[in-house]
Length: 153
Image 1: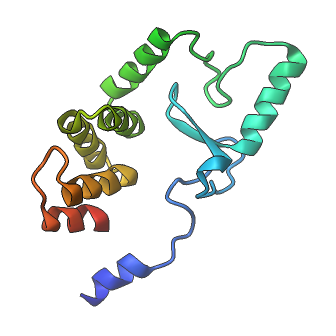
Image 2 (image 1 turned 180 degrees about the vertical axis):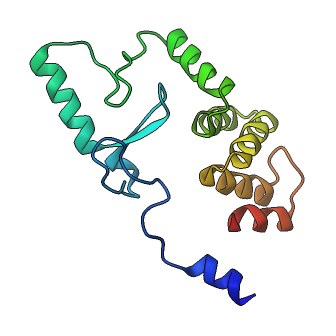
Image 3 (image 1 turned 90 degrees about the horizontal axis):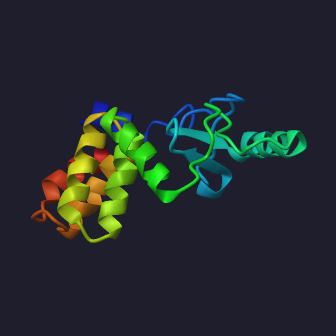
Protein backbone atom coordinates (compact mmCIF):
# COMPACT_ATOMS: atom_id res chain seq x y z
CA UNK A 1 0.00 0.00 0.00
CA UNK A 2 2.89 2.39 0.75
CA UNK A 3 4.37 1.98 -2.74
CA UNK A 4 0.97 2.71 -4.33
CA UNK A 5 0.58 5.85 -2.18
CA UNK A 6 4.07 6.97 -3.14
CA UNK A 7 3.21 6.60 -6.82
CA UNK A 8 -0.11 8.44 -6.40
CA UNK A 9 1.19 11.42 -4.43
CA UNK A 10 4.66 11.92 -5.89
CA UNK A 11 5.09 15.32 -7.54
CA UNK A 12 5.60 14.98 -11.29
CA UNK A 13 8.61 16.42 -13.11
CA UNK A 14 6.30 18.19 -15.57
CA UNK A 15 2.69 18.29 -16.65
CA UNK A 16 0.97 15.20 -18.00
CA UNK A 17 0.69 17.08 -21.30
CA UNK A 18 4.47 16.99 -21.69
CA UNK A 19 6.45 19.68 -23.46
CA UNK A 20 5.61 21.88 -26.41
CA UNK A 21 7.04 20.02 -29.43
CA UNK A 22 8.42 23.28 -30.88
CA UNK A 23 10.03 25.22 -28.00
CA UNK A 24 10.36 22.23 -25.61
CA UNK A 25 8.97 24.20 -22.63
CA UNK A 26 6.54 22.38 -20.31
CA UNK A 27 2.93 22.83 -21.40
CA UNK A 28 0.76 24.64 -18.84
CA UNK A 29 -2.25 22.94 -17.27
CA UNK A 30 -4.42 25.98 -18.11
CA UNK A 31 -6.35 24.96 -21.24
CA UNK A 32 -6.39 28.58 -22.43
CA UNK A 33 -2.60 28.56 -22.79
CA UNK A 34 -2.19 25.89 -25.46
CA UNK A 35 -3.82 24.74 -28.69
CA UNK A 36 -4.63 21.17 -29.76
CA UNK A 37 -4.04 20.47 -33.45
CA UNK A 38 -5.98 17.57 -34.97
CA UNK A 39 -3.88 17.28 -38.12
CA UNK A 40 -0.90 15.88 -36.19
CA UNK A 41 -2.48 15.48 -32.72
CA UNK A 42 0.07 17.80 -31.16
CA UNK A 43 -0.48 20.23 -28.33
CA UNK A 44 1.42 23.49 -28.94
CA UNK A 45 1.88 26.36 -26.47
CA UNK A 46 0.27 29.71 -27.24
CA UNK A 47 3.69 31.33 -27.66
CA UNK A 48 4.64 29.06 -30.55
CA UNK A 49 1.14 29.34 -32.02
CA UNK A 50 1.37 33.14 -31.88
CA UNK A 51 4.85 33.15 -33.46
CA UNK A 52 3.63 30.88 -36.28
CA UNK A 53 0.53 32.99 -36.94
CA UNK A 54 2.61 36.17 -36.91
CA UNK A 55 5.09 34.63 -39.40
CA UNK A 56 2.23 33.61 -41.70
CA UNK A 57 0.72 37.10 -41.60
CA UNK A 58 4.06 38.74 -42.42
CA UNK A 59 4.66 36.29 -45.29
CA UNK A 60 0.97 36.50 -46.32
CA UNK A 61 0.89 32.72 -46.51
CA UNK A 62 -2.02 30.36 -45.88
CA UNK A 63 -2.72 29.35 -42.27
CA UNK A 64 -1.07 26.07 -41.37
CA UNK A 65 -0.28 23.95 -38.34
CA UNK A 66 2.85 25.23 -36.56
CA UNK A 67 4.14 21.68 -36.09
CA UNK A 68 3.39 19.64 -39.23
CA UNK A 69 2.74 22.60 -41.59
CA UNK A 70 -0.48 21.06 -42.90
CA UNK A 71 -2.98 23.66 -44.10
CA UNK A 72 -6.02 24.14 -41.89
CA UNK A 73 -9.16 22.35 -43.05
CA UNK A 74 -11.23 24.54 -45.35
CA UNK A 75 -14.53 22.78 -44.69
CA UNK A 76 -16.23 20.69 -42.02
CA UNK A 77 -16.07 17.69 -44.36
CA UNK A 78 -12.29 18.03 -44.72
CA UNK A 79 -11.94 18.50 -40.95
CA UNK A 80 -14.01 15.36 -40.33
CA UNK A 81 -11.89 13.42 -42.83
CA UNK A 82 -8.68 14.47 -41.05
CA UNK A 83 -10.06 13.45 -37.65
CA UNK A 84 -11.26 10.09 -39.01
CA UNK A 85 -7.82 9.44 -40.49
CA UNK A 86 -6.19 10.08 -37.09
CA UNK A 87 -8.68 7.72 -35.40
CA UNK A 88 -7.94 4.98 -37.93
CA UNK A 89 -4.24 5.40 -37.10
CA UNK A 90 -5.13 4.62 -33.43
CA UNK A 91 -4.10 8.07 -32.23
CA UNK A 92 -5.21 8.28 -28.56
CA UNK A 93 -5.74 12.06 -28.75
CA UNK A 94 -8.03 11.75 -31.78
CA UNK A 95 -9.89 8.80 -30.26
CA UNK A 96 -10.55 10.76 -27.05
CA UNK A 97 -11.75 13.80 -28.98
CA UNK A 98 -14.06 11.60 -31.11
CA UNK A 99 -15.39 10.06 -27.89
CA UNK A 100 -16.04 13.53 -26.46
CA UNK A 101 -17.98 14.50 -29.59
CA UNK A 102 -20.18 11.40 -29.29
CA UNK A 103 -20.61 11.99 -25.54
CA UNK A 104 -21.89 15.53 -26.00
CA UNK A 105 -24.20 14.31 -28.77
CA UNK A 106 -25.72 11.86 -26.25
CA UNK A 107 -24.27 8.72 -27.85
CA UNK A 108 -22.77 7.39 -24.60
CA UNK A 109 -22.13 3.84 -25.75
CA UNK A 110 -20.11 4.99 -28.78
CA UNK A 111 -18.19 7.51 -26.66
CA UNK A 112 -17.42 4.72 -24.17
CA UNK A 113 -15.86 2.67 -26.99
CA UNK A 114 -13.63 5.56 -28.10
CA UNK A 115 -12.61 6.44 -24.53
CA UNK A 116 -11.77 2.81 -23.76
CA UNK A 117 -9.59 2.50 -26.85
CA UNK A 118 -7.81 5.79 -26.05
CA UNK A 119 -7.27 4.72 -22.42
CA UNK A 120 -5.86 1.37 -23.57
CA UNK A 121 -3.37 3.37 -25.64
CA UNK A 122 -2.31 5.32 -22.53
CA UNK A 123 -4.36 8.52 -22.71
CA UNK A 124 -4.79 9.85 -19.14
CA UNK A 125 -7.68 12.16 -19.97
CA UNK A 126 -9.57 9.19 -21.42
CA UNK A 127 -9.12 7.37 -18.09
CA UNK A 128 -10.58 10.40 -16.30
CA UNK A 129 -13.55 10.48 -18.67
CA UNK A 130 -14.12 6.73 -18.23
CA UNK A 131 -14.12 7.28 -14.47
CA UNK A 132 -16.86 9.88 -14.91
CA UNK A 133 -18.88 7.54 -17.15
CA UNK A 134 -18.70 4.72 -14.56
CA UNK A 135 -19.58 7.14 -11.71
CA UNK A 136 -22.61 8.56 -13.54
CA UNK A 137 -23.65 5.34 -15.29
CA UNK A 138 -23.91 6.92 -18.72
CA UNK A 139 -24.04 4.16 -21.32
CA UNK A 140 -22.75 1.62 -18.79
CA UNK A 141 -23.83 0.30 -15.42
CA UNK A 142 -22.54 2.31 -12.44
CA UNK A 143 -19.42 0.62 -11.07
CA UNK A 144 -17.43 2.11 -8.20
CA UNK A 145 -14.55 -0.32 -8.67
CA UNK A 146 -14.01 0.58 -12.32
CA UNK A 147 -14.49 4.26 -11.49
CA UNK A 148 -11.68 4.05 -8.92
CA UNK A 149 -9.46 2.06 -11.28
CA UNK A 150 -9.70 4.67 -14.04
CA UNK A 151 -9.35 7.54 -11.56
CA UNK A 152 -6.07 6.04 -10.30
CA UNK A 153 -4.72 5.38 -13.78
